[in-house]
Amino acid sequence: MLHTLLFALGGLVSLCTAGYVLEDDYTEDQFFSMFDFFTDADPTNGYVTYVDQTTAQSSGLISTTNGSIYMGVDHTNVATGLGRNSVRLTSTKTYTHGLIILDLNHMPGGVCGTWPAFWTVGANWPNAGEIDIIEGVNSQVGNSMALHTASGCSITNNGLFSGSISTSNCFVNAPGQAMNAGCQILAANDGASYGTQFNQGQGGVYATEWTSSAISIWFFPRSGIPSDISSGSPDPSTWGSPISAFEGGCQIDEFFSNHQIVFDTTFCGDWAGNVWSTDATCSSKASTCQDFVQNNPAEFQDAYWSVKSLKVYQSTGGETSNATSSALPHGPTASVSAGVPWNSGSGVSQSWPTPTVSDVPTAGFSRGGNGRFTKTFGNAADFAVAAASTSAAAIASSPSAMVPAVESDGSVVEASASATVADFSQPEITSAAAVTTEAFADDPNGNVEYVTVTALRYDDFDFPGGGGVKKRDVVPEDDLTRVKRHMQAHRHVHRHLLKHGIVVGSVEE
View 1 (cartoon, one colour):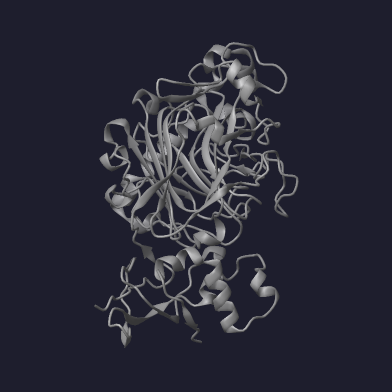
View 2 (cartoon, rainbow, N blue to C red):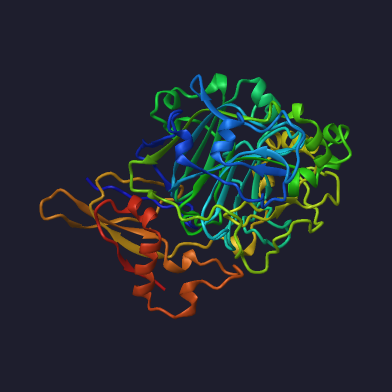
């Protein structure tokens, strides 16, 4: 039977997932052996001392009891030296693509002076990208999610997620955005996704799906976790709208690869410290963030992660993970992207979708091993107001009104090439725009039919005005060479297109 492949022009290709199977289960008895403990000085300039596993164990900062993994901070002693003791864990394994499902009973967010995060990152930052899944500071309400990349990746609002876009260009040094703002999506203030209210609701599940076409994040409160997650057979296609979906002017496989999973809790520093004075709840407790963190240990008893489970699934559609230990350094990176200063504090103000306090000091961080820099926010109290006022209401009134202008280095170009594919017994492409198909040959055994489909030409993966020179631009190549190298570079995408066949590329001018 002829299978028609339908492509959405302009690079908007939806891949239908064949299913997910469990790759790694970070179980209670194996959890800490699957992570490295970061012990260098905090690259975000936080008032923190990251301790090793032995110290963390002996001082009660980590434990595994009653089926949960505990990662806390010192809440007994007045802090000295570099700052309050805490832990930062980095997975020993790396992943490309996958479905990361984190079931949390409790998170450190919502505590004045804290800056917790759950995120993933690749080597040679920002070239292999960064995905911030859970992040916030001080008394913030509502989760902040973001991507950070090299030049050439931007997102648009497809109207299919509940959060609101704060900044659209994922490039860490994007013009018109605060340094390292990246592309950020704010969770709607539903009272459950972050910090104090998350903990009062007894936690929930964050699920992050990373494919060649998009990076999407769902949050489910404890009372609303899908049964397929609980049963170990997750199916994102049944979950409804995510809280964020990062896609648009970005070829995901060009900007994200081989990521480690990271948990950390720091204090003050380039974000929480810089916005301390704009947080009415926290600034009333002490004149500075460091003074509060140093002298009030009991305030941090609630600043802990309690992990019920962490599982990584991979699609049955192809091999998408790196089963070896990562070579990513676990200390501050000495070599960083040219033109991006190491220090924060640029003084550039970047507001949330609704007006906030102007001239807020730059906030953000540069986590060791990835050279992460600054990003700017308004005060934490404004976060809740902005998220609530710009998500559901804006989408209901006019989805297009919420679409930020896409930067030139993230523009999407239209498709104009063709390719031939074979042996497509289970097509995995769905479509938003139909194109002409033509049956031109039958398999000698009568089992396979072939189709010619409109696809993307090689140049469609070049973003005009991206601000950087690509390797392929240095030495001119003939069309066939370029197509072959493109197929190799985007092998994960083409696995979805060609289960067994080989692309015979004919580039049309």
